[in-house]
Image (cartoon, rainbow, N blue to C red; front, side, top):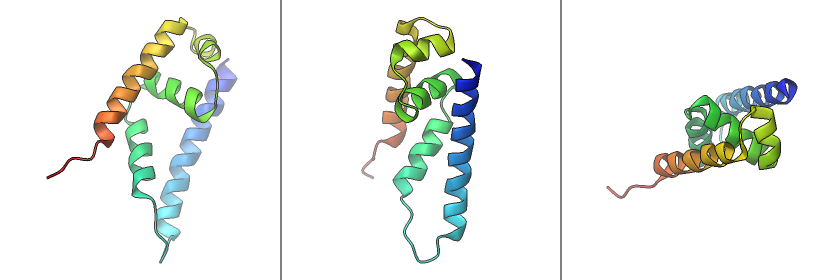
Length: 97
């Protein structure tokens, strides 16, 4: 279980570095600002919500598997995912000024 969490953390750190490298080496190419914003928003989530989001949406682990990895009830995983989605929705919302 710990190995899976560590691999997800490694994956997340690697993706963050990849975005930084893309930004610094992308001359003349367009970078998706939405992707960078989403990754930054996910990175700013509380640790447990971030773990649940990465395991569910990136690593494609089902809710029962996440519950086992995080050593919590399935309902807790669902609550983390719901709270994270709400936070991400608010942070990624386009506001008309």
